[in-house]
Image (tube, rainbow, N blue to C red; front, side, top):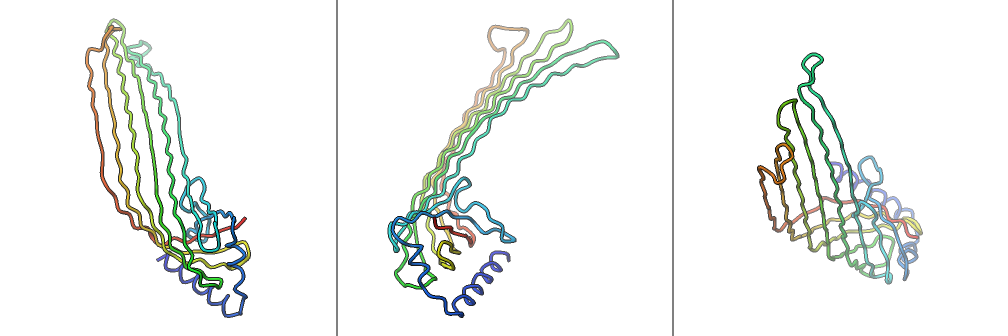
Amino acid sequence: MLPFRRLLVLVCLIDCYTAFGQEPSQSSTALRDGTWALQFQVASNFTLASFQGATISGKYHFSSKDAIRVGVTLSGNTSSNDETLGSFAGDTSIGTGSSNTDRNGYLVAVTSQYIVYPDLGGVVRPFVGAGPLLSYQHSKNESENITSAPGSVSLRRTSSLTGNSWGVGISGVIGVEWFFAQSFSLLGEYGLSIQYQKGNGSSRYEEWYSGAAAPDRKTIGESHLKGWSLTSNNVRFGLTVYL
């Protein structure tokens, strides 16, 4: 119900604004050639969030009738965890162990649309747009565990997991933008995207006993993923700030 409520509030605000006879000059001022803008999503309780890119969402106007809109997501992580442990029977050591885990990964995603504004004039302007979307993701996890006991063999286990995936597709939007001030606008839109995804992964598990030169046991695996996805977005509300 939240999207409907926000839509109702937006419609009421537009109604009130137009009822007081505001001049339809704001849109022509904001939509001039060479205008840059930043976009934010209006989330629940009217808080601001990322629009169509978690890192940045922006727009550039070629003219009052067309623009390019781009959303970029960049994220990454890297971590290393070292642990040691000991087992005791009373005060006597019966075993020791250590482990090390390294993780790293990153994601790059770009969504863009070429936006067209029909030349209807006024402060409320419908728009429609479509464009490509691209994404790539990589992850790698490696770990090593060593356990040993007095007078017994030691055991070293290693594992490695690697994954890569990419996607390419097309996204489309249709909506309306209300230019309530010279440098600000509110917009609501529907969106639809279709994407082809492909990925691969590999895994390797090995066991080594008492410092052997070669692993005594190993397991190697591979995985492959491919497929299509069609995604229909809920109604999205946003705030545009023209620079």
